[in-house]
Length: 192
Image (cartoon, rainbow, N blue to C red; front, side):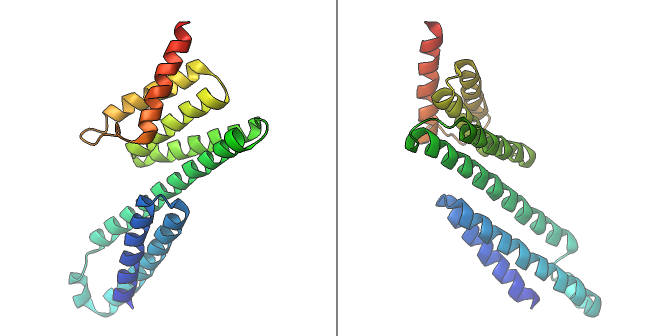
C-alpha cells in the first residue's frame, strides 16, 4: 500500500507539472492536490509500518519524507496562485473585451485576484509569478482604469523584477513584450 501510494503520488505530481506547462491551471491544481493526498497516505502507512517493521527505516528517512511533502505542498500553493491569476485574467478579459460597458466591480475583482496571487508568490519566493502579476496589474491600470502613474509603477516593477530572474529571461515572452510596449506608450503620454 505504501509503495503504491508513493507511485500514484509521483504520477499525479508529474501530471500536474505537465498540465501547468500547458497552462491548464485548474486541472494542474487538482492533480497536485491528488498528489499531496496520496503522499499523505504514503506517509501514514510508512509511519505505521516503521513501528511494526524496523528494517523499513532504511527505506526512506523521515527528513526525506518531510522534504518531499514540503515540495508537494509548495507546488500546490504555486498552482493555487497561478489559478488565482488565471481567474483575474478571465475577469479582466470578460469586462474589457466582451462586455458592452466597463464594469468597475469586475475590474476590482481582477485586481483582488492578482493581488492574492502576488502575495502567494511572495510567500513562496516565486519571482517569475510575481513578475507576471506585476505585469498584469500594470495592464489593468493602463487599459481599464487609465491610471497612468500607477500603471507605470507596476510596469517598472515588472522590468526591475525581471532582472532578478537571471540567468533565466522573460524578454521573449509575449506578455513581457506587451509590458514593454505599454510602458513606452505610458511614458510618451506622461511626457505630453
